[in-house]
Each structure stands twice: as C-alpha cells, then as structure tokens.
Image (cartoon, rainbow, N blue to C red; front, side):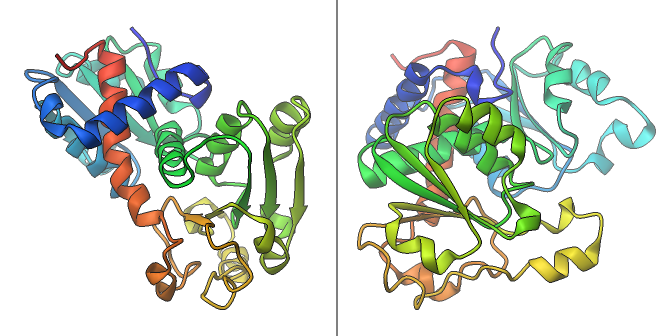
Length: 306
C-alpha cells in the first residue's frame, strides 16, 4: 500500500508515467470509465475547498467509482472531539482510498500511520499540496511541451503557499530550471526550502520584489494569492494583499509564449481582463487537475485500463 503525502514520495519516472496516463485519459476517456467500478473514494476535507475536492470526486466518478465524505470539519465527528487519526481509521473501513485536506501541517502523514487504505494529501496547512503540483506539471508539459529548460517565476505569497513549496521541490529534479521568486520581504520563500532544496542541489535562483522587472525573462509565471487564512494579524494581511496585481499592461513586455498559472482561487491578483490573453493557462490547469488525479487514483490502487 502506498500513500502520497509529499511530492517526493513519487520518483521522476512515476510522475512522467502519471502525466502519460493523464494524456491518454484525455485522448481516450471511454477506455477508463470502468477502471474503478465498485471502488470508493472518501474525501475528508477539514478545510474549505472547491477545485481540489470536486476534482477528486469528478475523477473517481469518471473512473466508474463512487464517492463519500465531508467538506468541512464541523460536519464530522472531530466537532465532538474525535481525533483526526480516529476519523481516518474509521473511514478507511468504508472506502478504498482517502483524499484528505487539513489546516495542520503533518496531519495527513499522521493519519497515514493508522489508515488501512492509501491516503492522498490534498493540502496540509502551508506545507504541501502534491496533487496540485501534479496538476501544475501536467499543465506546463501540455503548454510548453517539456518539463526542462525554462525559467519560472513564483509571485505573491511564497511563505505560506503550499502549492509553491511542492512545485519548487518537484522542479528541482528537472534539468536546467531557473527560479525567480517575487514577493515582499514578509512573504519570501522559507529558508528551509532554499537551503534543503535549492542550495543543496546547486540550483540557480534569484529573489526580487518587482514583478515588472522579472516578467520579461520568464517562460512560466506562477501567480498566488495572499492567503488571509494563514495570517494571525489581519492588519498585515490588509497591508500585503494587493502587493501584486497582474494586468494586461504588465504583460506587454512578457514573452509571447509565456504560460500563466495560478492554483486558484484568485482574489484580485490577476485582473479578469487577463483571462482573454492566450497565455493564461489557469482555467486549463483546473481541467487538467481531474485527469492527473484519475491517473493518481489508479496508480495508488494498482489499477490499469484494459
């Protein structure tokens, strides 16, 4: 039995295999419609979610399986004082695989120690979000045709942004990736990522507080929102939330084949007018999430299409 708690739980070859499977699902959906027949996915979301939860549910249904679970902690027995580990142990008696989101870092890892079925980390606090990273990698691969030899800029909340942390870790295993980190001083990439991932592997990166200065050299731009739920001080959130707003004017000096990503939801860090730009790939990113999660469910359950 395997779990996916951290993106590094998968080898580069396995990630490439998941991308290849997702591409085949996109090309031949009927081939996969009964792969998970009589299998059940439980979605245990102790924190609000739209895309990730519905993406998992849509993925399992498209594979011919069924779904059970809850979308907020208040509707589970944790509201009565039950531990998360006990909740997961209970649900693993009903389901074949569990996707779990929790606001506390490390909660999915702790749950995996007791679960009797595979656990997928669907986001734990500000730590990790491996299935969003798989979505991001599939989108970059489909848009750029490769996962090597490009410059990627991460802009916004790099301190609490779990999608950023996971994607930086995943791209550190790819050849000739250059990183540009764009943020205010208070939301810089955590030192542990710079020391244990970037510096340790001798990867080139730079830090700046200017999106305008960075954008002309980027092949991929990964925008993020400033996350109100991660702040202890509302005044700090209000001061920082509008630091970066991507609009058509800022895109004038950008490369014509720039790929603009965002894990969503957005607040106002990408102007709606950018949606009409051919370089905006974040709605494709949403769609891709379903197919990569279909591939992941199959891998963790040891299933394949006939």
